[in-house]
Image (cartoon, rainbow, N blue to C red):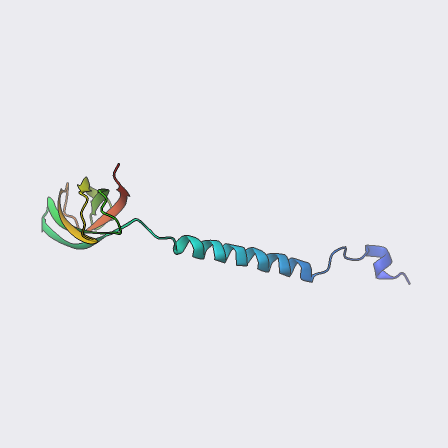
Length: 125
């Protein structure tokens, strides 16, 4: 009878090596994600409230939180029930000493909106 190791050969690397490599990869990925998530953001924004006034208008209150008194340019849009974009506007929130500031935005819509969404906000030049 032939020995199976002679016929098929033996493993060149130990089985545990792949578990160590996979564990190290996962640890690096989790550390990177945590580092990105904990970075301070110069500006954060959200829709504080909204009011659907009519089939062609929605009023939003944009809440801007910033650490430094910088001007911010935000793009907001209104969504219909089928998630289509029915109105959009770019607004500039001027620099202020207030850390939290709320600004009203009126959007004209092509059909009845059901919510408002912040697309993006960036520090103005």
